[in-house]
Length: 197
Image (tube, one colour):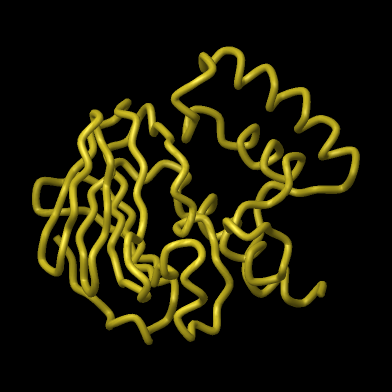
């Protein structure tokens, strides 16, 4: 699926994209994922971020492909848990609830690929930048108002499996309005966030 940039000691988030031989566009994230919650930080210098979050979610208009570079990765899809090891790949079709997680006590290196790319690069870079600036919780997630601003800015990208999407859109829309009044922005680059801290 991909050309890898390194093991768990490489740049913790590498974003690339392009068009494959069939003319299909994609965005690819090669990431170092922290050990499972409660197992420490594995000696990693970066903070937990969105790719460390194991909450169930759905990408309604994108398929997501996973490949393991180093370690073992858990993917739960359609009620079945899959364990991937180096070289293994798994594709989650658009609209399929799933979650991914590091089941081990060691850092791992994985590739996530989204097709089509949509706004994935902007969204994931924003979550990563906020995490590195200390603006997220222990799961790598920003507070509810910041999250609402991001979700509202990129509608149709990612939702929880429940409650119904229409309820989530209404809820995040209302909370996003409050978040924007509080001064929260939707898109962040790592450099911009670290310059403000």
